[in-house]
Image 1 (cartoon, rainbow, N blue to C red):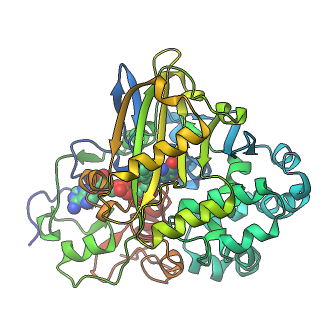
Image 2 (cartoon, rainbow, N blue to C red; image 1 turned 180 degrees about the vertical axis):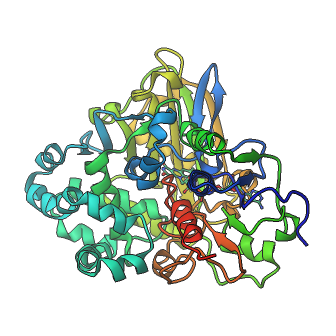
Length: 469
Ligand SMILES: Cc1cc2nc3c(=O)[nH]c(=O)nc-3n(C[C@H](O)[C@H](O)[C@H](O)COP(=O)(O)OP(=O)(O)OC[C@H]3O[C@@H](n4cnc5c(N)ncnc54)[C@H](O)[C@@H]3O)c2cc1C
């Protein structure tokens, strides 16, 4: 039975980027909103914390192509509440063993020019969707079913390429550079690159990178969620931390409840049977404060905010395939960010913060995962060990403990299998509404899926506002 306060219209469980975006949209629309967060601070996967010696690090998300592209963040005017996107000269570098690197610039022409024989092909594929980004972003930042119904032609065009396995999409290109960029971007999905629709992850990220860049947030990703809190409180909303909800019956009485949780957590909260929902690979991360720029062999890496380690496309694909099979490859694909390349506020003068994570099997406890990341640093930035001032390792188990939504360390709220990519958590024009009256899901387990863009929360709030009452 619901009890306690009766002065709210909406209760949101979870103060991650999506819960806060849902709360902000509803507060702006005049609803009295209360947000309840299990942790002692707000932010979910968008927190920034002290590392050492005045340096700060992003615990989870660091780079924000979809944040910069987010219609929700634009509509809520997060810039007016302090969010500032910072762009490095190089958006993404992907080094090879010979000291060269594939480079993705925000500028499409510069990128194409560096891709030799693939210049035209890159322009005709990625470039096409980047130029059409104002429309494409609505396809990639909302439910697939909605895009199919409302924009069938655009969706068909996008889907012909996006629906491919990345392992097939790389064969559209001839150069190792273009192939590595595609494989590295697709590998963000955390599934085998032989899986259908993994090309879509690469295509969406690359098109966004050209259209809006791959920026970091000035001061850290925390600034994004802090801005959302500012919108909520300016519109009369309230946020309470240290409120871990274990049943819907604990919630204050309110006609509307939004849950920034996974489908399994929702079932637990509602006392329903566990849903069919597959959790995916976990994250395993090293954060470091280093006393000088990383000694990358490939010079392009020095001015990049994101660096993909893993070598040529086949090696990246192999590492992700092995991880998907439950193995812990010794030479993993590693996503590195170095926000201090463009944001001096992150580290003491002359120092840098390095953020690097790999995928490991769900629930993995193998300490060799740390050595795998280090091995890739040894390979592409020999000498880095001499620069380390402070190092912090976050294991899959640590992530599972850090956030109740990271089941087994799965940071995506559910594996990006083909079915769970399009039916998240079900195939519907409105996948946010649950079968429990008055209860909506608003987390990354709903479309468009992982990322700090707030669009799951935005669409869920839109569904609430469209209710006839
Ligand atoms: C290592 C790592 C790197 C990443 N890198 C990027 C990146 O560079 N760019 C990017 O865009 N995204 C990145 N992400 C993904 C991004 O962080 C997530 O997709 C995003 O945070 C999802 O937002 P959310 O609101 O759906 O869920 P979350 O951020 O997980 O928030 C859910 C919130 O709900 C709370 N909660 C859960 N259960 C309960 C309960 N029962 N009671 C009360 N509160 C509850 C949790 O404590 C949490 O605060 C990364 C994530 C990780 C972990």
